[in-house]
Image 1 (cartoon, rainbow, N blue to C red):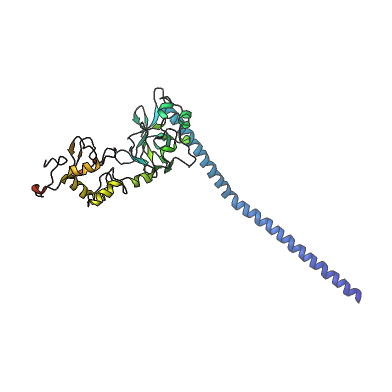
Image 2: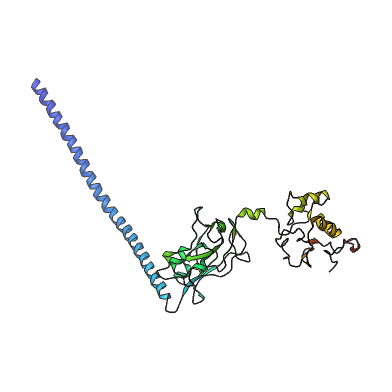
Length: 344
């Protein structure tokens, strides 16, 4: 009886092992069949995707080769391709302030061939980079400079890039107007004390063609922006304090004397000058300007002084504008002096 029990246990164990093996075998067969079916389903997708990627790469290469051949064909014998600035830079430039042309608009750049703007083809939409060169560029390189000679004059600074903003733009129909470019450093930090704006075509868009870079003709002095904030107004208002005039410091002896004589504003100063010119001149021991001329906005000044600035930079306090009283004011009540020659 014990033998029969042992035999039954052995049989049950073998059956369990057989069942486990059968399950494992079934799982293995099922997984393999599933993988084969899944792979057959995915292979067309993979092949399609691979074909698409290959076609895209081939198309891109073909386009680049076509563009390169087109660019090369544009450089026919006797033709010269170059970048050019179409306007002049505003000569008054400060760091961190957007660079503009003389008329206050954005600077304009074009790509030209034989003095004609290229308005079609790959070059008409090439990418260009705006750069800053040392101000002595034209003094140290030949007129027909090479790319290497140009690159050697690009300003590099320990303080970072010489230019900031959007310095890479794309031509449209052969032209571009970068409007968000500014100098990061003052020109005093460079070897020549001046900077020149320049532009070149992005290397990958040249296609083996030599495209001469654009270089502004006139170098500029780039001042620190705080200098602009510290400058006195070009034409102080009548209600401004008297030290806004050139040659009168805020804490100097002239300001003290003027305040002691109840002259605190620009208007009070010019009235006092017209009323008693000799008194003020004697106090300042300053020679009178040789001539005066009329300007706009009820102002007059020395004949050799531009009508939009105060003084000629000589620190002469009388190099300023005198007030002409409105025409509706009684002329008999107007102060008279050599500085105020009377109605025009």
